[in-house]
Length: 285
Image 1 (tube, rainbow, N blue to C red):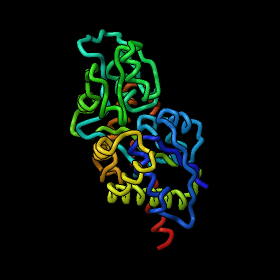
Image 2 (cartoon, rainbow, N blue to C red; image 1 turned 180 degrees about the vertical axis):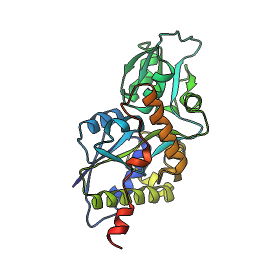
Image 3 (tube, helix red, strand yellow; image 1 turned 90 degrees about the horizontal axis):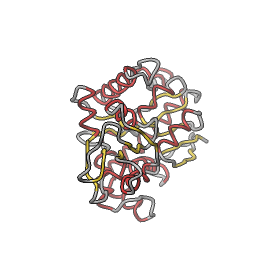
């Protein structure tokens, strides 16, 4: 039994539930799945708890020796992403207090590079909007479905997409999250896992309406049908099936930014940490 973990967010559920519903099957593999918020998964992956886990891309260089990077189940922003929000008609001072969704999240790293003087508190992403509304913090970074609908008394101070474009030099999608697989799994099994998960994401994307309806009918999703359609269009789409060269370049740019800012001990390239799928072809040719 392979221990797989993903977040309870709409895009992760959508991309994984093709397996739960039996659309994709394997005679050799069986999965147990756990759903936790992304920072909980980041911390669990640092401890090596799961065989396969959704992670924030910013975490990956910290676990690269123990986990391979999967090509599938990825979320990138392209003209959109997390939002820094505040109350309307307020001015953020240099040392403003902000709520972020977790120390190892991608949005947190980008925010900390852009706002080095901000005072940070970390919260579950579902609590961030309320923390701004009740005055506990001056601002907060909304992620996941929270970016689609928030209180009318709040406004967007900055788009992390715009910050990413400035920091990265522009022209690349914003890397947010992906999946990592434990290196201790046998290579042939690792390749089969990636192939199976890739097929699940592909089927989900190709059958978006059917799968979305099944998730909504079972009460698995936190948003309504319209918001789900919008969110999946953003974060669970054809680009989520398998990373392309531009997405890999964006990842490398993210890792370089983190290295230059002192978050990582070494600068890595994503291509060097993918599963060598060509091994299966060579072995059985």
